[in-house]
Amino acid sequence: MAADGSPIQDDASTCYQSAAAVSRAACYLVRDASAGAGSATGPGRFLERADAAGVSNLGGIGADQDDGISAAVSAVLGNDDLLRKILLRVGLPNCLVRAALVCKRWYLLASTPALLRRFRDLHLPGVLGYYIDLKLQLSRGIESRQKFVPMPQPDLFESVVRRARSHLELDILEEIWYCRNGCIITMLSLGSGFTARWPLHPARGTLQLPLPPEKDIYHYIGDIFSLGDNHNQFFCMQLGFHGDHQTVADVYKLSEDGVWGIMFMSGAEKWMEAELAHLCIGHAVYLLDCKRKALQKVYDMGSKNMIMLVLSIRIDGAILTNVGSEFDLG
Amino acid sequence: MAAPESGDGNNGAARMVTLISSDNTRFEVEAAAASLSQTLQLTILDGGGGGGDGIPLPNVDSATLSKVLEYCIKHAPAAANGGAPNATAVDRAELERFDNEFVNIDQSVLYSLIMAAHNLEIEGLQSLVAKKVADMIKGKSPMEIRRTLGFPDPTPEEQAEMNAHMLEYGWAYE
Image (cartoon, rainbow over all chains, first blue to last red):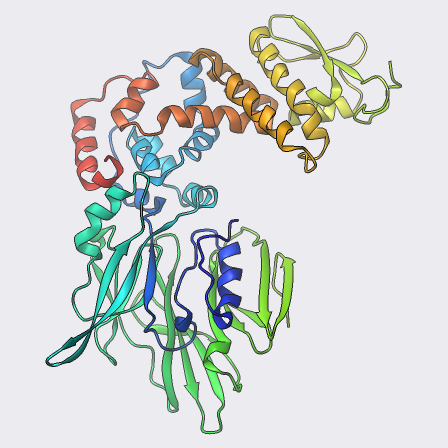
């Protein structure tokens, strides 16, 4: 899988960026350096172009009519295996959406999660654009505004941006915490909850995400991110500090009832902020501990796919490479 | 003729096998080429298809089989090199040129090829022909796809639903 598309930034964050860019099935992991474990006030966050997930939101359409098709054609198109192979190769997601509307059977085939996953494996989504955090000096103080800047789109995706434009603009004073896979998670003000939205699918509306549980030690939210075929499963990493520079990291998953449930709890460590990051690979979440050069699986959605991973971690000038289906760097 | 060993017949004179199409035409090809077919590979490894026997292929007619074998013969050397990691750029470009030319065929031939590649499990050919149909779909509206592939006109209800979805997923149509 190509690792281009992920701009290399400073070393502290490159370690997990490069690993993820190589191995993520669904998307490039492109984000600013400072967002790894802590502050989310980077200059720009990238939003991916729509992927084929949109297809699964289509309603069913009319009945199948094969009568008029010649025997050879209907033998081929009537075979699910063959039709799947064809649909997988139409290239751009919008071509898949169009093909899905040909008839009900095509729609049902084109919208299965397995096919969409495979489609995304074959056709990596690109970056749709990015946000610039504009700091405006106003009479009432400094205000931060998120400006969406589309990437030059030589292909049909120009129209995606054009149509979603009004939903991509965030002129309210929101801070962007997460912006990938067509999902944006923002926070209006410190201490308020999060809002998730899907600008390319405005019909999905917004989703309010509560803050993760309070801890009795000083803590803050390290990161929030989404996973899943429709990017509707949310995870949050929270860092907590004890007095003697001990840090703990907890990873939570939001339940369907909107309650954060603990997925992972680390022991106390002397971590620096930049030494800890989350990593979404395929359908699993890992916690990357740069200090111990360890990667720990926190959550797995139970994908049957084996994850082949080439992981290059650059720590203290040394390059560590591991090739395998599972991580074991410990 | 080389000894009937169960190898891929790379040394000395290549081992030949005979394939028999549904209309009883006999094709003699190198075992290495025919082995691109997963379906045939086991039979050939077991020593089948040699001598006067021949392997009957009741689902493939002679016109389609000769086309399939044209592909196999061209791709066999690269496949024998294990996906040809040491193939030169020139070799790869030549194969690509061949592939492009190869699928430049009538739709009826194309669909027969798809079925044959599927039944014979020839991976590269399956991808190639699926890609060709996908290219015919690419960039077309649902209606245009239906026409290209010879679907009947949609019923008024189907048409209404298609229109509604085109509105909702307008970005896919511009």
